[in-house]
Length: 472
Image 1 (cartoon, rainbow, N blue to C red):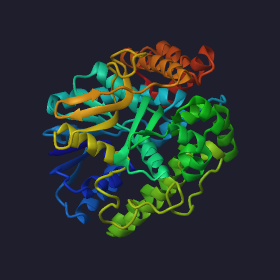
Image 2: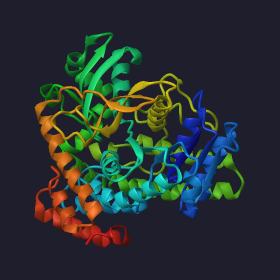
Image 3: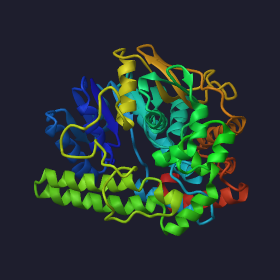
Image 4: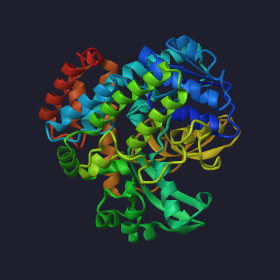
């Protein structure tokens, strides 16, 4: 099989490639990284090629600036692009934060601006994919993942499914907390991408959601991704929120935390990545692949250790911060240039979810996987054509969404409002209507009205320049 990756120069790609090629039974004979930016091809792309070589797959990974070459013969395409790059993300955050509004890359104004830059580009790639590899399946990682998948579902002819590892990661950690085997766990999960809730958690058939709520303070100490929420609020809610719900439940706390830190997450990532590219380029020019890998892993550890810390507590992560994962441990998949750690029966991260989807779609291992897909009847309070994040049964016949469980009434209201915002953003992107884009942004629950939405949209159009020039 051939896998093509849109955004093959993204900073996570070497780890992604390593994770994919390390899994037993991986059957990709070719992985083609599409990256139009030469500097990224020569650094991140080249490092990914060297990772494959270290794993014994020297001829498997290639890098190209030619989309026809990347797509032709592809069975699957991963989309992981960032239109406007890291500086675009910084602008997205700054415009909102200057007005005391949540500035985050996937949620609220930042997610809106990112989607408006991205949707036309992704749809153009979908046209190319339909031309060069009409039978391929597009697996969308590009953020905001649910919103982008909705645009593809409504306005492209390719088969597509959106993936995110946030829900599966939360379920894994809940199982670990209770000392349960993940294979024993049943659950109910539903919502939108980066706006979801676990409303049921069953171990060997026994409902444990009440236990999780009762012991929520212990759970917070066990894993940082649950630490953002007030325990009494979660118990009253009656469901476990996933980590990105924080931006909806604690917007003022987020804004104050970023002000205390003196920099947004986007600013931290920009300076980390700037140093990363320089270090990798220097090592590769000297012919030292291991030094390049060491520089890469050092920076990725810092990124992981600082993930959401600034947003929650105002603790900006300095460039020289100690290595380690979000929990302070050393992650198995960050180490020597060689196979990634972790068991094949429980693949983690983005590549784990993606490989589960691929194995199911090829018929090798049908499974239920949480994905972003057409709603059908899974969340009955939304339209059938809406893209939602729910478990789906996936096999050689395709993706069939399953019931998303009974969400709390307040969660249903929040999902309904955010979905209406998403529908309008997609409409604005495909029509190029700037006023519609502003009014769409005004529908978002984190945006305080039409006037502020218009001000932000005007500033986004000015600062992003060519990337939003199509809006009129």
